[in-house]
Image (tube, rainbow, N blue to C red; front, side, top):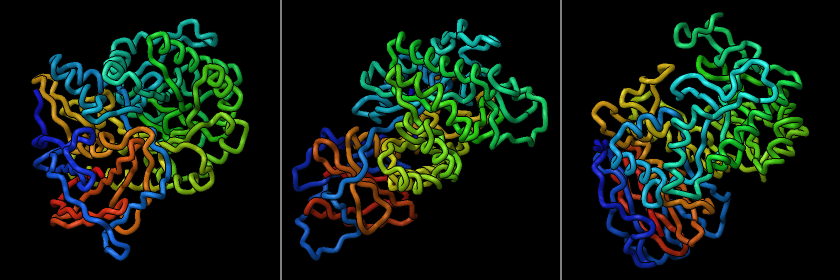
Length: 469
């Protein structure tokens, strides 16, 4: 049974709005009504001197959009699968179906991440350079059924993957974590130590060759399960020393691994490589990899957290490289309306600096957000009470849906003038999508000019809006 933060209205969906070419469809979300269909708005012809708060430059198309999604974490599946069958199926349809969030492009871990049930890798046999003991059996309990459930709703779902840590025996420290945290990880050492700017992965040819083989085995094992991984990143947050699965690399170390080992192995399998994920504001880290032999294998660059401060320069330097927002910032588990507006600001920043895809982080977590292996409370699209078998959609679910439901793969972002609190896109079918928010405590009227037409709408206090033209 679902308990929602918002009252669900009858949504005017992009495929079913009963509007004429002279009208704009309108869906809004407030704290009291989530994704509620509003009456279509009549538009008027826009004269050359007509004043508008924002003008959508429909003739000026920008980057192509690959899609929206989240990460297939183990705790995402254990929480969703604790629901009764009807509710579980409804949630999966809401996430991946065209009438719901319409997630089309998602991420997954290679082995354990910070929202796994516990630490594991696909091969913890020390010195097994030939990967004779490689196994994805753990994933058959969680990640594989999660992905298959999504594929049943969306058979065209695209997936990319990255590790949080290699097998422990491939690291100098022989532990999945980098930083000590008492009983949370039983790593002994200085709890304030940091390894940023160093290679925790053993920088020897036999280890790099074995790790590239590890990636190959992962790709092949998942293909055997009917799941195609189209792209891999060599490391999640390669600068971050964490109490959970993590592994720091230098840009030089990653360059050597990609250029001589991972790149050729993945190219032979038809798998692309994403550089990153970039979580620091230093664009020179990307230059080190892109301007060496490794750069020939890089199909995209992923940004998260402080990486947002490097994206402008990297986009300017590599205008033809696909950019991705690879992990939306996670909040503190309160799933507040205020934080939802912060994420809206992040989304504008990333899209305005050239990203083609946007990844949410935790799809689903326990209602007690700190109920996880490393005790880190974070936000999620959905919160589940496994004992009562109930769930609720959180504010960021609706924010993501205001984009992901309407903006289709292959859409183009449109340039705008005037009010900067707007994102606009044109879909492959020619429909124009305008998304905006009113984070203030007061109503405000917004006038939009697009494609020779104009319309005005009064935006409720603290609200989200999508208009379809």
